[in-house]
Amino acid sequence: MSDLTDMICLDETQFEEQMKNVAEPILSKARQSGYMALQMGELYYELYSKKDAKAVIVICHGFSESERKYDEFIYYLMKAGFQVAVYDQRGHGKSLREGTNDNVVHIKYFKDYVDDLH
Image (cartoon, rainbow, N blue to C red):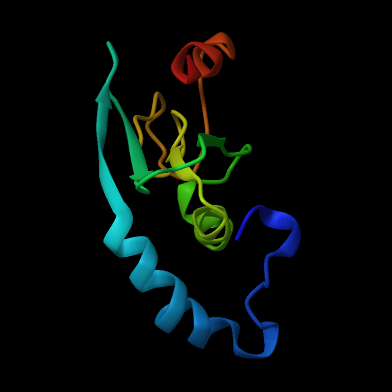
């Protein structure tokens, strides 16, 4: 595939089966995961390696999301020739939390999100 414009998406009527049997094996083979150290804790990340990638795309998820939401999109990006990096922002998913309730997203300063991305 040269880009995403000619990408054939997974069939909605067989989505779960295709994710399990087509996309997930490709993702799990390429996935490298770990934690990046910060002063206050760690950010969880996943890197989906691809030989001869056109470029690296970094996914920064939205509020109250996590990297898990992007599996299908990462599959499409890899099929289009990209290497992909995604991480859980602080207060989300498997990354550090500043509050005591794991069900609440809390950060002291919004600037911390920007600093973490850099």
